[in-house]
Image (cartoon, rainbow, N blue to C red):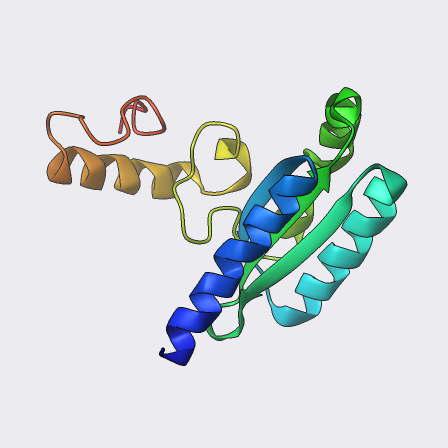
Length: 144
């Protein structure tokens, strides 16, 4: 087995393990390594005993997968209010990206790209997907 396959498998298992403990809030971010550790420490402080923080990433591209599992489902809204918008604002304040590997979506829109960048993304989306069948209504419903 190649080491890249092994590592990829471990990452998938980490998320699976975190979700077995309870509901898992999952964030895919891009941050410099120094801020990566700050984010994890601050998230631990915010969540406290309400959840477990599991983070891992890709060193070469500063990608961070931040997962917070919450065993007590009655605490989900409380934990979500501790995490959002904190995670997005922290990432933005450090010059990071809230959509490292995946799309922008709707929730993160105001934390990620300038209007000019979104306009370019929308034009590319229409060019590559003129019928709008790939992830419809997720982001590129914006007019460019």
